[in-house]
Length: 261
Image (cartoon, rainbow, N blue to C red):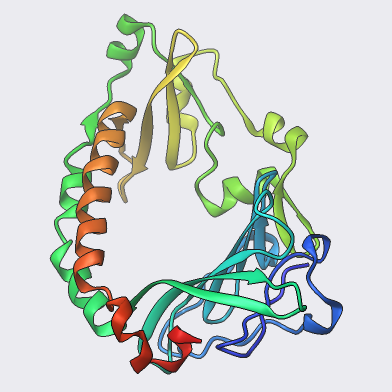
């Protein structure tokens, strides 16, 4: 199971099958930020597991455990409700049985809040990628649609996963059963509101969206995957540059005892 230690400086989180000691197993801490509503994973799970990694969600931490990184090694993103500092640190087991902690990134929460305001343009730019979707155009281009290829909503995720040891894992049989390829494009109007995928010659080319208004009128839109990737690459670079600008310099870590420990 995945656990998070309540201690800030000595966070001990990982997988029992990756070498976490039994004496380190403690309950998840409760959320210390009472002004925010906590998101609950489907099936009331506390984490997500794939073949390559495990992600654990605690009250004030997110812990990432790469399964190929060695026994006990993990990364913790701490939101700093008391210190006012958000930091990402790496934890590695030491030969003597202790742990070595190394801060990879840290930023004051106030500075991050200001940064989020500076990146407000990301949403209108993303919405600008939406294109109207017409069934006649799909037929003319020989483009098919499918539902369930990319589970996004809570309902879709719940339909294709099971909870194993408090973690969500994809069930291949449930996933296959959840994928639906309609015989006729008109069946897209019977899809639940949300996303679906567009395919051409066996390759996914876009993500479609169905929206029903209060009067029952249905609107269809889509985004090209190529445009979405380009958008992601551009904004990834912008956000990385801004995070570097507002990050706490390493030579100031001594001002924050938990960063230099």
